[in-house]
Length: 233
Image 1 (cartoon, helix red, strand yellow):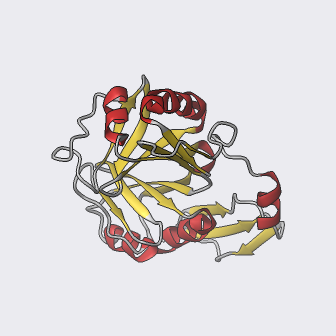
Image 2 (cartoon, rainbow, N blue to C red; image 1 turned 60 degrees about the horizontal axis):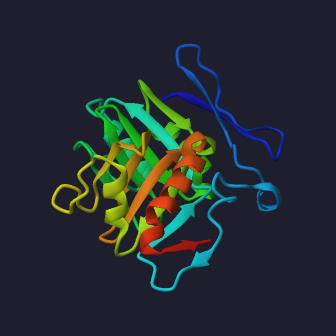
């Protein structure tokens, strides 16, 4: 197992360290999330300026930014002994091995297959550091865990007309027969790229890069306007 040194920016020093072994790899895990007080005062999501709460009555489309989630990318060989078991022990979810599949639980954690050796993990923001540490503690050999929370956000798209908006925006087949609950794929969307997921019968999620967030947010507002738009804060 890789030796891990955990750095806590609130303490300003390493708070957990294991003896170094020159024959093993070294891993530093840093809590990137500020203290709750600092976060409450200064945190600003990529779509805070655009997705202000509104309700058009009988809106056909409901938009919401699921801001400040923890986003982790995981890479490794699922055939490596202990890899799948280690991921499940750390996350509480089985590692998806079937292409384009998504596993999730009621606690807000999910893991999605992106390629044969890559997965996207989403967790509540305050859990990202603990999950990252747990993965390093339970995995060994060749693997990679990267916290990309600051570079992505999630847009929830739901409502009776949500699929109509998707059909305007992406060539991906979003008919329920082709895109059931639990499916997630990288997709071209309004000439940008994102990860499109169906998390329930009535809700889709768009995992977008921060640099595309404003553009895609404006696109969604425009594409949804004819159906009436409700924006959840």
